[in-house]
Every structure is written in structure tokens, then in C-alpha cells.
Image (cartoon, rainbow, N blue to C red; front, side, top):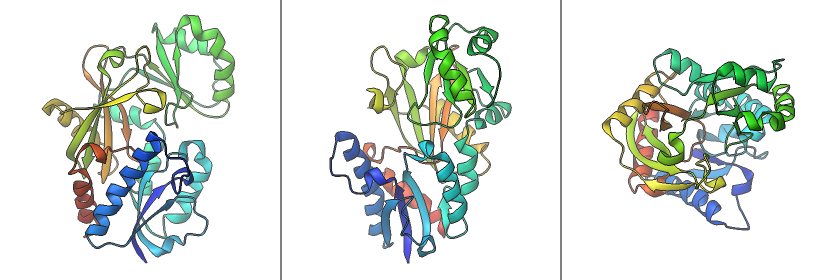
Length: 297
């Protein structure tokens, strides 16, 4: 019987080629594994889709680098249904399912959380992208799926790009719901701030910046990560976001930007498998382990 199972995806279980990207993944998971082992727990690390694992043989599951779930959404949610009664999920299944679909942003907005202006386009919508974009009145927007990660199918929409994206839009909207957000220009210069909180308490933060001329801050697209000391306003905003979740997350990453009015706005709330940058703060893995222990005591 294992106390904790740290989940990754099968690409990162035993990689033969170690790039800088994969090196960081392995380091992040190892920091958590080492801290839990140091505290006397029996811990393993494996892929969430490991067919040989008996999920009743682990008390708790910690989602860490399961970074293929959004490409295998149906399979992932079916797996969640199978394992939810065999062990305890951290974060919980209810929180994961709520966070999987970015319609949660509309729910948070109704509760007073500032988000960029957003239209949700439901699966099967018969309108053209041109009609929807012109209806918004915006000069520039971002189109992306409501279930996504790593900037999957994320596109900048302008009048000059509408025609070339129309065919792709029609293909996507037959398969999944999408969202259209007004482009937030400050992200080009100011980047995106990620605040990490454990059991609702602030731990540390980083600043993510896109490469010159791009808006995507993910390192998959050349983005860079920088040290950041969160302000009181940023921390208060992040705490407010978490206070409106269906339940308090054990771990959370709150991605903040400055909107076009220069006000703090929620970009995304990451509660499933967010990169938490344990390597950027020597005390972060300790605080994470503390949070886990608070939940199981």
C-alpha cells in the first residue's frame, strides 16, 4: 500500500531523451517525492493511465504532470470516474471536473471576479466566425477551446485573419465549445503573473513573459519564467478567486494579467495539473507537503 502516488503522463515516466524541458518536469516531481519520503510516506510516481496499477493500493493521488489529459479528454474523464471511489484524489474529482471546462470563468465573473471580456461559443453554433467577431465589436481577440492546455488551438483573431480561420473554426465548433476573448494588450509587455497557493495560503509566484512579438507565455512557444514578488493586491485577488471555487483547492495556480483598463484580471485558474515551480522556491515543496498533511490528518 502506497500513501501517495504522484501522477505524470507516460512520456515522462522514463524518458530516454532528457531535454531542458523534461529535466524541469523530472525535477519538479522529484522535489515533491523527496519531501514526502523525507516525512516517512511511501510514495511512487507513475502515469495516470498505467494499466497495471491497482488504484486501491494507494491512499492518495496527486496530479502533477499529467499534461496529455486535454488531448485525451474522454479517456481522462472516464479514468477519473473509475478511480474516484478507489482512492482519494488531490485535488478532488469535483474540483477537477469543474476546472476542466473554462465556463468556470463565467461563474467566477458572476461572483465578482474580473476576467477579460469573453463570449462562449457552444458546440454546434451555426454562426460564422466573422459574424461572431463582428458582434463582439473588438478589433482583436483570442479564440480557444473551453477545454485546452498548452495553448492548444489558440489563435489571434483580427479582421485580416478571419477568412483563413473560418474553415478551421467550422471544424472545431462541430467537435467542441470554444471561447472568444478580447485581446489583452498588456500581456505583450507585462506578461502573466502566476501565484501559487496551498490550502488558500500564498506560497510564491513567478512572472511569465512571451517571446518578442508573441502573446503566448508558455515555454512551449519560447516564453520565459522570471522571479516575481507578489504585491498585496495580487495576493488578495488570488485569494478572492479561490474563495469562489466549489471547494478550497489543496493546491492552485492563479494566473493574473493586467487587462486593457490596467486592472487585475483572472487569466486562468489552474487546479488540475499546473506547473507550480517548486524549483523556484526552496520552501515550496515543504509548504505543499504541509498542505497535504493538513488534508489527511
